[in-house]
Amino acid sequence: MAQAKRRSKTSPVGLRVLVTLGPEVLRKGLEALLGELHMVTGVRVTPTVSETLVLLRRYRPDLLILVVEDDVPVDQLVLAARGAGVPTLAVLNRAGDALRDRAVPLAADGFILAGELDRRSLNHALAELWRGEMPMPLALGRVALSALREDQRPAATVALTPREAETLQLLARGLSNRQIAGTMGITEHGAKRHVCHILAKLNCTNRTEAVTAAYQLGLLPAKR
Image 1 (tube, rainbow, N blue to C red):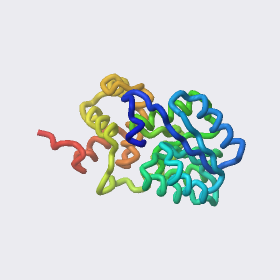
Image 2 (image 1 turned 135 degrees about the vertical axis):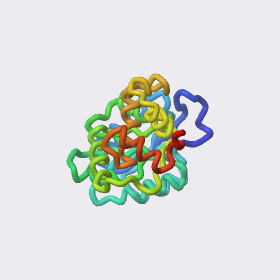
Image 3 (image 1 turned 90 degrees about the horizontal axis):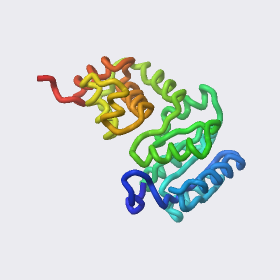
Image 4 (image 1 turned 60 degrees about the horizontal axis):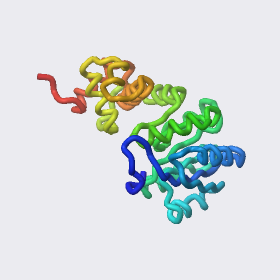
């Protein structure tokens, strides 16, 4: 998020959010929910890709929230936002494997289901993004993991976030999710999500395989 907004290490403040795409009722609902969050000071809403591209330059938001729709070039918006240094939270408007499969390769910084949207879940998702984590529904995580398992070999290059790299170090030490959570100062649910992301990125089915693959890829220092 914009560096100028980082006034607190524990929570974001003064965020300007741009909401785009999806049914009007969903956009209006997001606008209302965001207006109730103390960390948000401004919200702009637009229904089209073209207007969003303009507002990314003129409004200069700290966060883009977009609704993933069929036959809408959301990838273009995600790439444009990333080029502007703006993180993206993708809202999955409908359930179903087809929509989830489309979301899996999307380079958004976080995901949330429209059916689970409320003040608490939205606040939690924004806080996770602020901490450099990736909010993701468990259902989507499972789909992503299944898709990546189609190739059982780990990729030649794997990019882990700093928090995922820290989690991997703790996995290598044999810590449980609860112990990882306590060490990192996060919830056990957050620790499970980091582990899930690591398994997905390494194309592994369990923690032992993940640690082994990490050593092979040089993500962990060689054992002495």
